[in-house]
Structures are given as C-alpha cells and as structure tokens.
Amino acid sequence: MRSFAIKMFVAVMAAAALTSLAAAQADTISFDLHADPAIVSCLSADGGPVPTAHVTVKRGKLNDTLTIEGDNFRPHLAFDMFTVQRSKFLANGNADPNFHGSFGLA
Image (cartoon, rainbow, N blue to C red; front, side, top):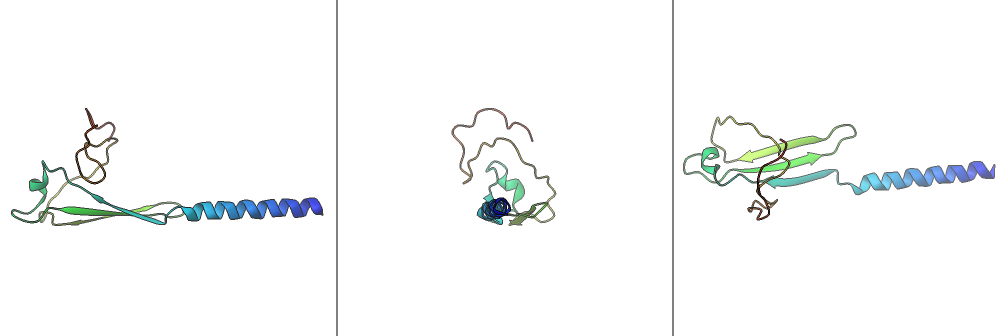
C-alpha cells in the first residue's frame, strides 16, 4: 500500500510540474512586422502613411492561430507573405549590421 501511495504522489507531482510548465508558456504572443524601406512606396497609397502590420499568435492544444492585421496598405493590393530563415532587419525594423548574403530557406 505504501508503494502505491508513493507512486501516486510521484504521478501527481509530475502532473503538477507539467501543468505549471505548460502554464509558463504564454497563451498569446504578439509582435510587429516592418516593411523594407526600399518597397514601402509600393505598399502604401500615394502620399499615405507608412503601412504597418501587427501579428498575434494564440497557442492551441493541437494548432496555433496566427492573425496578421495590416493598416495603411494600398487598396486592392495583392501580394504574398512568406517567412525567411534570415532577415536583413532586426526585430525592431532597423538594418542588421551583421547580415551578409542570402536569406536562406523560405
């Protein structure tokens, strides 16, 4: 009986540890995307403000949900969005002085 109680205690503690570990991850994360200054004029309406985009990622049990909200883009603009392995920009939108060469896999 004591062995069963010890095993139960260990199982409960392991479940509690896993639950607190999962809770440590944020359920939602958000960040801004920055357009390459070289193409901003292609994205924005003539004379309009600089386009901006805000990303929100919400964690799910099986899948995460990515939402991108853009403002100040040229009306009826068609474009593709993709991710790259390396970027010539830092997270704040400034040029990365250590970037040299290609973008890597897309």
